[in-house]
Length: 411
Image (tube, rainbow, N blue to C red; front, side):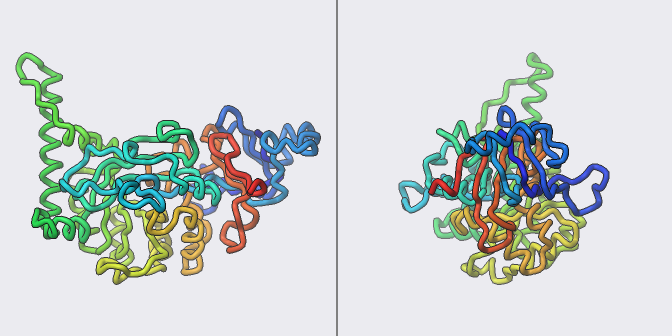
């Protein structure tokens, strides 16, 4: 596939200007795709194929040669925190596999075993340029389970997987406290929630060390009894797996930072509703945040200080910000709208675009595959009808793994 004559925003930063907030772009550029990967990208002036493709464009070979006609071309959008497929659209209980509310500690649950690939929300995501979603269990439990990064196109979940697991979900604050208080079961306080999380991490650490000792000397050490819950936590302790910590209130965010420091965890703060109130601490902690959902009411006490200006406040301090929908809280197809409103409220356009592309990819540990248009990365591309933040703009063509999976003109 060859895309020509596009206004390309690669979302990649020049290696010579790492401190510069700008990204590499081409006012009139091309992208050459081969075997689902980006093979070449650059200015049309240097395009080696420009003379060869004129006849193909004229003949209407829309899936082999795409003339962008000066439209905006970007990496496919990434929603860094959703529950798409695991909480199915318009189904109710039968399609709701979001929370296993029978045990506050469920690290062994895998999102891919609960996601329905045929959920129509995946199609709607493609129609609005969302090519990757990070989806998983909700926040009713202290340790919720494993998130997965998925493409929004495929015949099955297994085909859609980009990385699974890509994160371990943990929840602090109101959600686990409320759910288990109603069951007259621990945790019913924030102290108990933190204590349960610490207990599981300490147990996993001992379990990991016991297995390491056994592997070193099988004659001197007993073989540990397999524990699927503790086994699931080992990658998090080794910093091989990101820990997504659900935290709205400032005190819960501080608890997340405290526990992350104790166990040397690689974390992201999910929601981070009151993060702007402790922005200086977040900056000092060098932590990534995933903000959202931004387009909702203050439906619970934890959201009473919700502020649409938060993405701009944090990003201007140099904190890496991703924006999420928390689908279905905000429908997945409105991801770009969330970013546009953040711009209206003070976030720079470039930071807002990063928040739904490269920053979102980094927050999910998948930046080696997606999030920017660079040679060697997956050919996930969206061609917009106009500027991404113009309310009239639509996705004209969505490409995933080098295949055009959506054409607006076909509707």
